[in-house]
Image 1: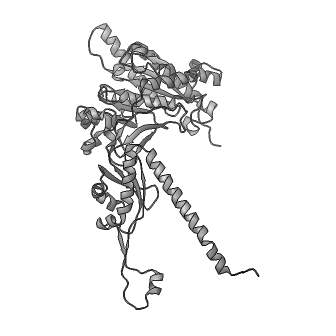
Image 2: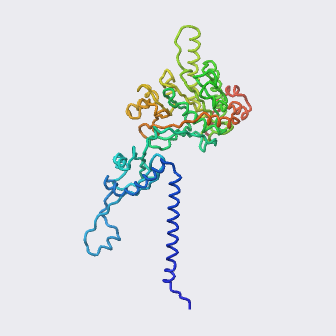
Image 3: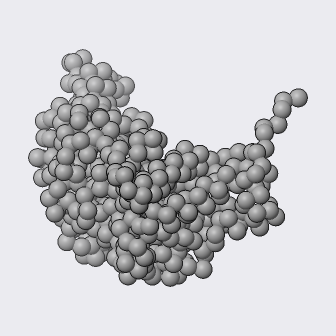
Length: 473
């Protein structure tokens, strides 16, 4: 007769359960060993540090008073307490989840009563010593009630990085991937609805390479068109944009009269877009639907902007002529920055010192985004980043004059007080040329696109007043 004893059946499953558990453990161990062996030397060191952080966390948290004491016994402990003696209070340690990367570790800790962001920030220097890190920062976590601890073993600011463009269209329009901050965390700057960006810094410290990355990352999209002004050269093949010029619908060198003509054409296009946007897009702001191949975002790069705006002193006719062109160039650029945002214009201006004589203040001060690479004087730093930089001397771009900081920029933190330093990557000329050549077929002149959409010339469109908003019934 068959034995129906459930106990015997349960014991019969025991070896199977043990075998499955061992298989899972062996598989997990093999996965970790393979992952460790395939990692580079820096990442391996970070993996070892992550293991050390997990192993020592409970003890270290109590030593740094990053814990809470709970004197209230749990219901189960109360039921088990048959002798009536007082129960020992429990020590609660924040749960910690640790991940790693090449620079160090990222730990996410859960807050406890009396142990929050302020306590972790106070303990950050001691955590850096215990974890053998260069520095540790404590920031609000991804979720409420959570703190993110970032520890870096090597300084990302003095670790040169290289960016190889993928050649694929960006997943999100007008999102500028700048690089990593001093804690190795990626820095993204949203340029949606941003009319202008001002970039300053000494020659050779990374301004052009920083802009080149933006161009290379956005070039594969037909919804973005570029125009370049390079104030250092007379012809494109002589300058930094020789490899990228084939992706632009227009280029201008250091000739002020030529620049004046091109700026007038851009302002005329801006006016035509303003006059027709409601009829074509059904919106008064292009960003409400985003750029498209028919109505692209127009990125105007004005490198060495002081060339086009500098006030020329002198009484001779040639100097007066240059002064007149410079004054009108400033006025036209002001028009593009102040009025071009809603119809899809983004102007990037770079110069060595973003003082008022290089970029007029009526242009510079309406650019919401400002970056500065190395500067020689505090006044130049203030011109680029605002007067608040005086209150953050450790972040001043004046401290970035060492060759080790080529490619490091300073900008204000969005949504938080203070400034951050960013390591921007180097983009090789051959990579820029490869992307420009592969995307040259995407070049379309925005004026011709607008004429195709409206059936009218840009000149005719500029004679129309923008369509007034519909009156309420």
